Length: 237
Length: 218
Image (cartoon, rainbow over all chains, first blue to last red; front, side, top):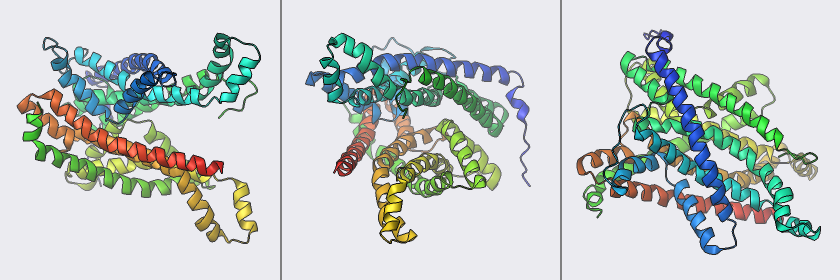
């Protein structure tokens, strides 16, 4: 019925198989590096959003609102095209380079975008602890430091970690947008294979399978971490 | 400042209209298919919930760009002729967003406790009356904030149709930028346009969230 001839060998035929492996490696790198930026910045932003100083809270809220309400593609293009103009013209981007400066733009852009989402989860984690909890802990004679160390942070972590699992999965999916600025990650490679072989269907399906396997691995890994942080005797969400 | 934006304003705004149209198509189709997915997920029949669950789990683990590419490459094979990027983008959005809406509907239906259903039956309401007056209104009120949030995400995602060459706002901005080389102003303008729509949307979502929370407390 279909006139189309499937040729799955494009996925492992050289040099395409090598390209695909390189792409997977770059996807992993992008995800992990951006995740580190997102975690550090997101925890900081989430914490200042519950701080007692209004101007600090305002700065945190401003960051989160701006970065959440602008599509990631637009943010990435802003850093990629407008960045060199903002930070001095001498910064030159190498388009289509495997790991030129566009790669660092993708890492930082993805990190900054995800930080706004991490910040929201962190804020929600702290907000989920009732005022009574603080008073109850303080009345037992703990110092502020002890209270955070033994009660507040463990409780907040239990609320924060499950959504962060989802974010960690999302970061790998969002890294595919980096293809638009020429970072040769999995999606870019599948697009390139299509351009060379006209077997886009096989190339795209192969890339999908990569993300599925990756997602499954991440879910397993994060399930392990979630279990570590489960407080005995508390009903999990 | 911003002369480049002013000069090309009609061209850029026409692109923004494409984003809005694509989002509208994705929402109508995605919500409709999403209802079916949500109902399929809570079905007791294995031959219904197994394939639906597989569909949801697979699609949710795949980047949207790949889904857009996939449909862009597959549709010509199935239909036998090349399609307009808008059509293939709309189809991929509907198929992709339906999984997210489906999960929202499933959570909404499952959030209704058995006790409430029993209470409704005990007052003498029939099955359809229970659904009509109790289940659907309560589930809808609980789902509304997440539905609005997902609609905002869908709207933001329409920018990804850039990758198959659809002349939406981001694609048009890159075209203008290649002639004018005014990246800061042009991309700031795109960001502001998206921000304006999404910020209003997220406020509305938060309003309904607060309203729902207060109503549940009373």
